Image (cartoon, rainbow, N blue to C red):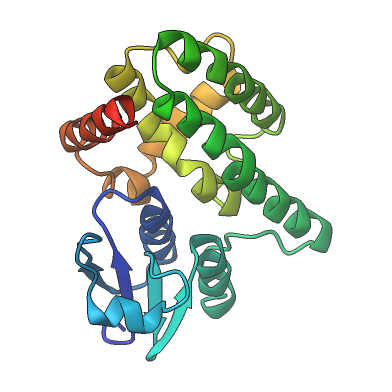
Length: 223
């Protein structure tokens, strides 16, 4: 199986980790190929000539790009294992909607707090980020995971939040997430990170802090 499935990723990309987690939840063997994005391999450029980005899943020699697209491909291809998307058409459409909300609204708003220069600008950028967190919190009512009792498509899309928020907080020295304000999301983050398929494949926190400190310094000193 590992010969049939290859994943081009980096050690820290949250988009690549979505695929790592999904493959382990599904019990799919694969070969991980780690890319240096400052010197992209000919294979990556061949498999993703449009965006030239990771992650790329290669299955039986055919490449699939973009993390949410890859998650759907994995779910459709290995149907006999734990489903990631609901079977009901409406529920499936809602899962796609909220995953898109995460990528189009929530993640950019949190990243904006990280990249803004100066404390006051960061505080201002925090307002829409908190509003987006409030919207997501509402979707967790009476549920352990966004997918119900098991990790699903939306959980994987939002997975970066479970391990990166406190890294960002340490790097920028600003509170991004109040567990008292968001008790459901706080519980979800713990449940998500405690799941074996997730816990065993999280990047080392100290390396993440170092990496994002370098990112932050570049943003703060950029013209």
